[in-house]
Amino acid sequence: MAHIMEDWLKQYLELPNGILSWFTIARVLDVIAPKQFEKCFVEWIQEVMQLEEGDVVAVDCKTMRGTTNKSAGKKAIHIVSAWCSSDKTEKY
Image (cartoon, rainbow, N blue to C red; front, side, top):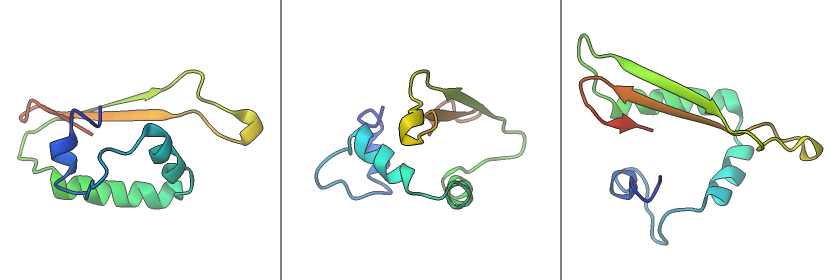
């Protein structure tokens, strides 16, 4: 999915070596405190989303099967996507 959104990502990130692998992203997210990540994510979404009166944002959350690793203390991977009714584009 990141390759599809590469131009959009480049607005916010420098990508001199291209898109990071899912494994690299997972390693980074593993060391981030969940509550701090949530706080920063909400602030970021408020900056990039320009909602207008009456806009509806539908949020879809999924848990990926088979991604739990109990022996390593890893919980399942979760995916969240949001759809804005007026924008007609998916936001990640």
